[in-house]
Amino acid sequence: MRGLVLSGGKGSRLRPLTYTGAKQLVPIANRPILFYAIENLVEAGVREIAIVVSPETGDQVRAAAGDGSGFGASITYVDQPEPRGIADGIRLARGAMGDGPFVTFLGDNFLTDGIVSYVRAFGASGADAGVLLKQVEDAREFGVAAFEGERLARVVEKPQDPPTDLAVIGIYLFTPRVFDAIAAIKPSARGELEITDTIQWLIDAGADVRADIVAGEWIDTGKHDDLLAANRLILERLPHDVSAGTIDDASKTHGRIVLQRGAEIINSVISGPSIIGEGTRGVNSYVGPFTSIGPGCRIADSEIAGSVVMEQTVIEGLGHRIDHSLIGRNVDLRASDRKPSGYQVVLGDYSKLRVP
Image (tube, rainbow, N blue to C red):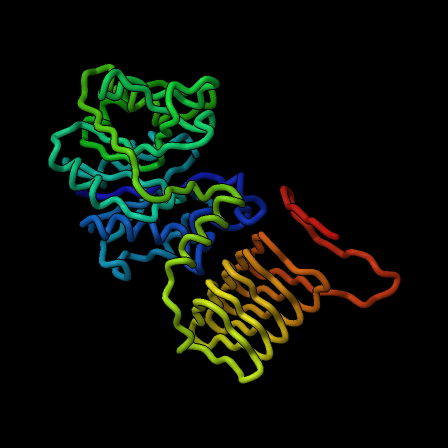
């Protein structure tokens, strides 16, 4: 069994964070989302992995994931020159997948309980394809599975009247028969080769398409709230470990906290679960639960909770707590005592700012 991770896409739902970086490299608990997908594959026994990358962010993904040795795998890369859909990414990776079955994993999907059982079941089933499903509150935002008895009969893309509450999530299992399906379908109205059309072609052609309902939590981390929810889930599972950093006697800590190498906490209060990145300094501040502070940051005379802060960011002297926020790389967020008082901001497209 081989693995295919799709790491293209523009990440429009996470702008402005994704204007200069791949959405799959946005961190959850100070590790890129992409790494969790790779680890899910390796845990399931998949050691040969190809990652499909876009021209805009391919170099960043290559630099982050490397040759795969850090994960106990071998990683190669496939370029997707234009964002023409999931099925197009699979088509481009045909040579890398060889003549056997493979798992396709969208790089911004997050599962708490992994994919081991589904990979094993698919390998033993002799099926031509497999889709993973998850019950969701509003299925209108997803591809939705419809059944005839226990047989998967249809996959409907974002229906206004969903036949079930079972969404097709971004993890699929295929044999090489999927390439016949991709060759047969036509681009959709948005110019993409749709994965739902691919699966439907297989069903209509009489292929055995397996469907499994996922246990545990599944999150598509492509949106602000969902990324913070995934961050929360990971932080809840981290063991308490402050041995790599330092906490002075004037500071107080509560709950499970991770200090990465060289992190310093000075005259501050840290409430877990939370993680403080390598070389980050917290001075005269409060870091609340479910917060990830990336490496090389400085948090001074400020309060923050329930948020993700990326690397090399400064937050200093703020008069109000930052809550439920995503803050990108190399951000400078400081109070000013200039008169007359007012806000001085530089905000890119799709930014959000909430002030008291």
